Length: 294
Image 1 (cartoon, rainbow, N blue to C red):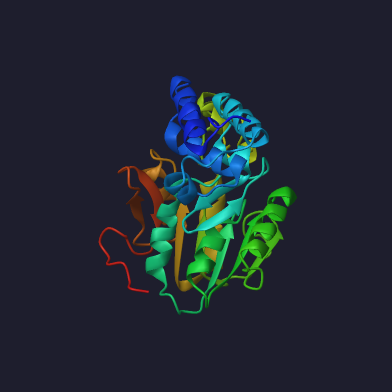
Image 2: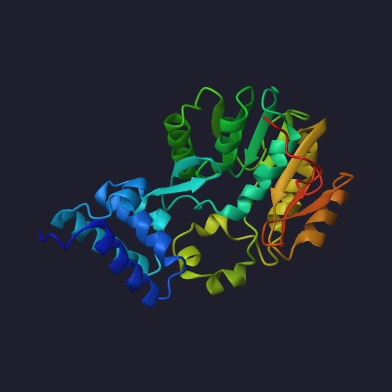
């Protein structure tokens, strides 16, 4: 080991390699990987940059950087991904949660105040990201996450236990809402697969090669999940309940029409922070409603 192996020098060297490799957000990715390899926190890197790291830590870090240069996502390399205000374990069996999906959370936060008791369901829950982020913010709520993947459900259950939410979250293997009674839920959420089948091959390698295709493939036109979901959401939602589903940026009008055909009125298209259509809902629009002071 040499004195030159510090948090700062390792971080800067990795950042330069990632930048040369045309990796998006090289500084952030290099820092996240360094935290995982060295056990240092973000604050450690900023306030104690000349801390010496061991040869073993440096070797582990270099291995992680090599994997990132091969376009493996950071979340896959370290096995964790932040979403909303929680940290989740992620595996190759689940979709790595994305910031775009937090638009769903914006709607849910407006639909029910902090201390309201309500029942929610997350259809196609994957890692449990949406349901668990919701329950972490709404302590009087309870919820169910469904998925057809037993492997995904195992990840979701582990995440619930790690977040101490397993007393309010139940995860069940079923197709969408099959087996649930009519008018059972106050809030229905879903981030279904919506990529047209023949578009998957054109996705970035981080998604195409590392996310489960089951969680991506929306059929020939990308809309099959919504055709299945719209009548089921209408069936299981209570009369005054709220639904919110994520959509592809170019699918707003088509998905809105499918939910209107299922009997919903006042269906809205909500844009994400990038000004792209992202959510279909009958609930409040975060852009025109004040955020409640929880």
